[in-house]
Length: 468
Image 1 (spheres, rainbow, N blue to C red):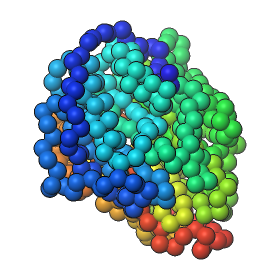
Image 2: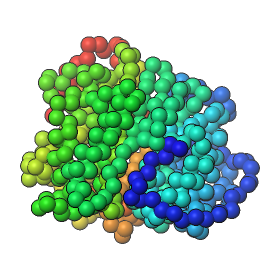
Image 3: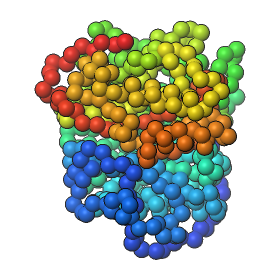
Image 4: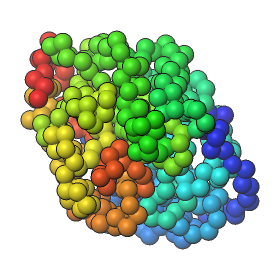
């Protein structure tokens, strides 16, 4: 089946949980509805917040989800965390039941295409994989299992993307590869991993996962330069290795692998000779393995453009001094994907960094606040226009989902309070993870959907971006 799981993390725990057979007699209201949230929907809309009946006690998972209606294909971003009660597989059943309830209330067939599973004890990953393979059958999404602890004590948490399957063509090419096609767009999601092992250095692991990702997307007829977003989950990210840090060796390998690749050349505007890179997250996990996923886009449509964004408050990561890494991190702060009359902005992992220096050392609330301010400035209309994307721009209210990585367990509640104060309700998963600099306490990534007030077709040829 199409679950993707690193062999070194396999487990063999078995259990026989009791499954609640209560009928679906309630609605779970979305946290956010973005753009035309009812686009292409044949059923009734969800019950508005405030009118939603209490969730019955048979459903134990906390959930947040966003409904996004763009063009003719409805999307749902789901974040599901079971209550920290009962055995592992009890919590897993509750989480999957919650996912099913959310999808069933959309009024049309929905298919999950990709999911990230955060697991407290990776010995349970094998049992969960088998449960998910039975649950999804032939429609198993690309799935990665991460040794990251959910902050609120649950055994696992699930982040998933779903879309209306009746209006799109979904092809499962293997455990680590899926393609989704609709309206002249073809999205490609791939996954890879490098197991830990003696003599298997961070440099070697990074080269291995990028090589695997390149080979995976090639199976779908995709060139690696069409990749727009990358996620890297590195075990022991700040741990020493060969006289340096593992993350610095990841950056060295990534730089070498990216040499000569012209990202965004098919769909990007002229950048006056400047090099473009995908948006990216590089975050720590337990162990010493490496898991990676990527998202690519193919299309012949003339109203589509990829625009890498840099932050006016920050030095581009690829211009960092060698004091941070012998070869600088090669990623953009965000990737704006303009399609017709809307923009999807994939926001890279963002921390409390101003220019190139870490700020607010030792204060998780201020670091969280600074990370959110960095995101706010990165995606606003002024910065989009600076990059040649006229009529675009998002606010924090346009975020469809977030991941918040918290380094220290004791900082979780203060970090969450700061996020809720700035953002209100937004689907989010909080996970314990090391950040790429020892002094950083929190990192945030997100994706935003917002209208494009001046459609791409109306502003051809593309304006040359003015990169700060």
